[in-house]
Length: 228
Ligand SMILES: Nc1nc2c(ncn2[C@@H]2O[C@H](COP(=O)(O)OP(=O)(O)OP(=O)(O)O)[C@@H](O)[C@H]2O)c(=O)[nH]1
Ligand SMILES: [Zn+2]
Image (tube, rainbow, N blue to C red):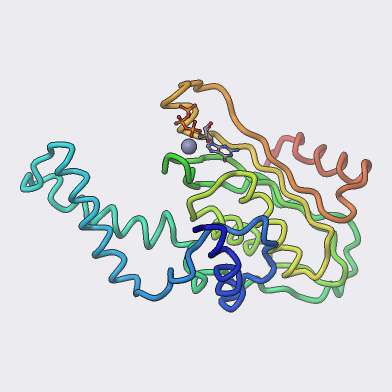
């Protein structure tokens, strides 16, 4: 079913502005995902969460939890999964590199709050994004916004890392982009194997960042303490 639909999904997402995302890094979003409004989605999710809490045996007339289904629905649509809505894609303002800055730029320690698509539990970590200008520069905060947008989906960390790089490559018109993410998955830390110490590192190196020296320089900047 998913296999059959995936091409259709890709076309639909392309139409909505995600054509920079290679097929391998696309979230499995159904082609009819945008046929209903966000208000309708909130109402449906509210009903589903009511059912879950009822099934768990909770008394939904209790003052503290009677608003929970609506709260969860709003948090899903407006915050935790807002990155599923292409209308929320950040405008990645770029400028001409008039000052001819020729070295890499690294945006370090970008906070990542995402959600694991296997258990719907939090992924919490840091992304480090770098690029080398081929004529354009990007507003610093736009890198944080790109990370935030792709984080706010049900995700696996590998795909998130690739999507960030692909969005930056598209915005800047260069392959010379890299991203490293180090994150904790609560599905590993707080349930299942319950290993509170482990974290997951993923990376994607495009263009010049595949070269040993460039990669090394980027990774060395990540070791530098930020003192100010
Ligand atoms: N590759 C990858 N795996 C992830 C990510 N987030 C969660 N997972 C893993 O997805 C896997 C799902 O495995 P299942 O065996 O179906 O689920 P489970 O029975 O809950 O597995 P346990 O967590 O081992 O209890 C788990 O091993 C998770 O650790 C991610 O971002 N990338
Ligand atoms: Zn998980």
